[in-house]
Length: 482
Ligand code: CO
Image 1 (tube, helix red, strand yellow):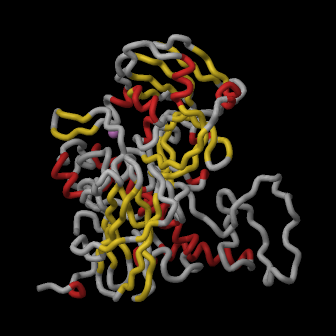
Image 2 (cartoon, rainbow, N blue to C red):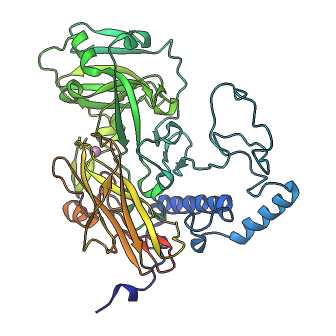
Image 3 (tube, rainbow, N blue to C red):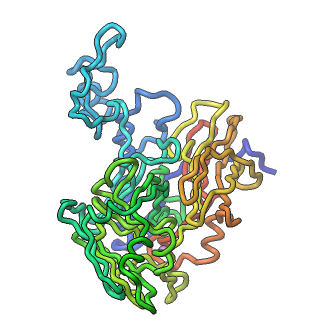
């Protein structure tokens, strides 16, 4: 019998892609190269500054020596700050001189920042762009490894763009509601803001989140495996208010939502969803929407796949049938067997992931750690989250951080004393409908992996994520090993 401590150390390396034909390999290899660069850059920023948990120097993926030589020269030249003196301020920050003792000198004058604040120059987390061929059609991922609480800062909310980020003057933007409407109407932003508003916390998750992990443990960090989900506070008008205003003709069953970006994004939405909890939102986390999130107007469909939350919303066309747009035929369908695909799979099922400890971190030694992460469900509230440290044999109850809101990220915490032996950390959640987050093996058994030549399948992977803890404290992606 093999005991836990006899388990060999696991070093996660990227899958060997040489078995694939060159065309098939290209996307995988590009992704892998980009995450390698990302980790190397992060190491450059953080390697000597933080002990212990972030990141894992042993898992260095490129020439650490090369980077450190450059850093040493830069520091000697600048001759001042213990952190990277040569570095420009991180995005969203302004770099200031750091006094030896902040109690002995006056601080900065107030309101010299133009009146809109910045974050600390010592904070560096950023969204990470997925390496696609064009800069306009791509996506960025939220740094969940650094996330706290349940709200995603607006500047770190994940993005998916098909034709770049449009610049739209709200004074000229309108929403046209027509088709099977008794009183078709064009609304200005001022018109929409006069209606009674509602404010709700909701996550948005891209249905492609975690698509790399169907067949093997592929990517290293939780930002890249799970970073296509974010939670914001959204404010806007219930869509039902607008539908009542225009009046719906008998037989209406679907509404086409259209964006004003260069891709003119379109999705068909069943009218029942439009009457229930759909919103036309213009505010996010207490201020106007960010341009990347649809400024000045976005369709919000709580719990449905991110692609349906049409940004820069300019048109709603009411119909008796779906419109069969590109985004619901060739994309955003789930092939289950060769020749068969599920279409209009809107709901994001319950899912959870441990964000600490997670891939590329390193625990400094045995002892106490607070395991934490997020859970969410497109069907309502998270009812419970369970943690396993042995790959799913024994499950322990985690604590949920209140308020636990429906269709929102929910933070969970679990106190853990690590004994220094190999561990397999997993979380699984149960939502208020009783649905239990499945294992990746369960999902593969149900849908197969014939739906995509590279990854096996793409959309709606809500399987349990495994992180392996090695005896040296290094944390690696352990998908498909538990
Ligand atoms: Co879907």
